Image (cartoon, rainbow, N blue to C red):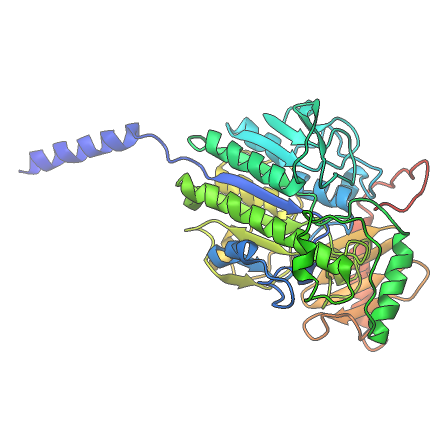
Amino acid sequence: MHLLRTILLLAACGLTLHAAPSRPPNVVVLLVDDLGWGDVSCLNAGEVRTPHIDRIAQSGVKFTSGYVTTPLCGPSRAGFLSGVYPQRFGFVDNSGGIPTTQPLLPGVLRQAGYRTALIGKWHSTGPMPHERGIFDETLCSPVSSPFIDFHHPKLARNGVVEEHHEYSTDLFTREAVAFITRNQARPFALTVTFNAPHILRVVKNAQIIRREYDEALAAGRTLDIPKVPMARPGEAAHYASQFPGDTARADTVATIAALDEGVGRILDALQAAGIDRNTIVLFFGDNGGHPENRSESRPLRDYKWSLYEGGIRVPFLASYPGTFPAGRTFSHPVSTLDLFATCVALTGAKPPPRLDGVNLTPFLTGEISTPPHDALYFSISGIGAVRQGVWKLLLPPGASPQLYDLSADLGEKNDLAAAQPERVQALKAKWQAWHAQMPVPTPPQKKKQQP
């Protein structure tokens, strides 16, 4: 009997040794453009309903202090793709780009055997996505640009320009679902960069709109901001009664509703393919909202371009069933920098030698109870900021530092700098030490306000 047990044990070991390894998880990134922190209902149960986006939080984690690296589209996306502060390679405004020498997450996953695709907006100078050797398939902006036409998008499929007559959100969703269906039997990494709800084009100077909007808000008035319609034809009318006298807001909410539907169809495609439990789904905005496109930053202060919370704190959700706890709210500060490190750890891909982000998994599962970061750092247009714990220090050029306790003052209304000079100096020293590591950026040839 003992001999028989030994033979059976050896046989079992042999079977284990020759069994196929478990398949690594897929990665689906859903990146949205200028969506305000106040426009996702699982974060801010106000006037906008986003039931499908909320599904990601229900099956995973809602980050209530989720940050981007920069309150501007181009460098913010570069931070997520590279996992390092974009200031390290001189990408500090929308006129810059990602160097070809910088490892990017899709390329690292592709080297690990993943099928990779980019669908949607691309905003980085230099080689276009299909020329970088990191994507197997691309359908994206034909040139680096902040704009994609919602109604008649011109896009490049693997470098070949196509003209489409389909609503851009529906087009990107359909292409994403098709990619999932084609590749459901193998590991894939899909990045969908929706242009919603970014404005279609500039109608009026954004800084004037910003000032007029703030003045109207303070006076309790409704400001109907001029804006080229972004929603599907006729859909803004569904929200007219909800936003009387504010046709711009009604149009943007209709645009967000279409975005939410698209997210739902992508989640449904993963479920229909039976791979939803083996897929990491990441959803986040590229920067804060702005009155120009009428996405809502409130209750946070200020908007896109700003280092107040309304410019850098974004909707940020992550789901990986069975690994990330379902329905968890995570309040410690995290960054889109962390997604690179998290994905390579979960997929088994080989990370590049330097990352500024951290693997969030042990923090989400409770294996580690301390905050993921000692501090997060920000810099744009001569303005600096650092967040450490509940404290936020803002360093405006030529003006006194401002200190806020975000646990008690989310809207950054009560400047505590005068009352806590030692904390101000300590945080300022931390930011200066970080900033000293960054190369001095080359100023652009022509300075202009980017949309």
